[in-house]
Length: 224
Image 1: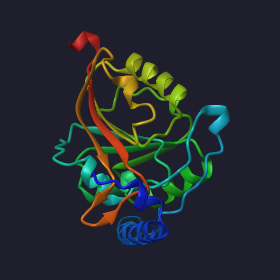
Image 2 (image 1 turned 90 degrees about the horizontal axis):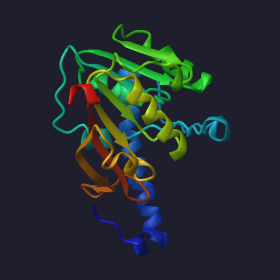
Image 3 (image 1 turned 135 degrees about the vertical axis):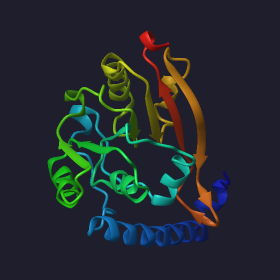
């Protein structure tokens, strides 16, 4: 990670970062159009930040997902879910990478979830649920992605619910984990495989400031 705070705050730095990020978004747009037939770029603010601790819908760059899922190997027996899937960028990425099992997403915002469902209808392996993530039982899933869908207090509650649901190991990919990811440190059953910062790659700025991700396996006590 290369981060120069002085450069970031300078007029030229802001201009340069904004424009390299714009180039990355052009790449995102073409992948979106090829896979989904529509763009998934637009940010949608949360309608439930105060009431449910939910964050807004912001699509993660494909190049960032390449970093997060580096060396990942999945089988036909795997079942994937993106909690807070938004317009479905992660689901599109999994299709691009030919994930062999079922691909699921759940999104609280009705408008955003319906947008995701509309493009995903042509893919039989993709299933989008519009509703509250706390209403699901997660025991059928083996792989989970979370792009900071919750504020910290709600994240803690979700992890406690997840632990109650699971009867088998689960792999978790957690993007933008610096706000609440440390909650999993030294927590019984959780094993961290990797934790990295993402900021700049090949001269392109992926974000206006460094963002962190982590990869975990949760193993219920009965399976230890």
